[in-house]
Image (cartoon, rainbow, N blue to C red; front, side, top):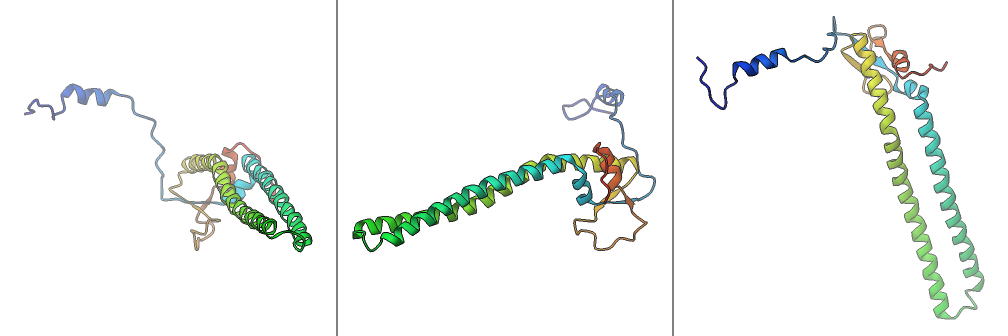
Length: 183
């Protein structure tokens, strides 16, 4: 029979585990059903995605305006340097050359950093959008008993017999609570 030890499970513990309410079980698929979505269509219909795109365009415009201002400053200083280089003493000439080189390097570094900052900003802004889309995909698939969902826009499905997969795109858009735009 069962020896009482620290490693053994008591009858009371087993009884408690049996009596605890079980979480609602997901409906089991009746058959192996494959579903597909068009993530591009879903995103295009999400107001959150449109807001992210608008915010990214505004951010890009700000960075571009700053880069353009820096380039104009560089051009102005370069023109001043070119007009006055014959008149400048050697030490002033060297100082202005160094200033121009530093400005050029700073502008190049700024452009590189902007690309990185824009990528990080887009990734951060899109995280919530992608999580919401993923949740809606899960809900739509569970409702229809779909076992696997492929994204036809992701390039991960080289070929799929149309008509054999359940297209969940409209159902996902419905779960997001938005009206599907006409294509």
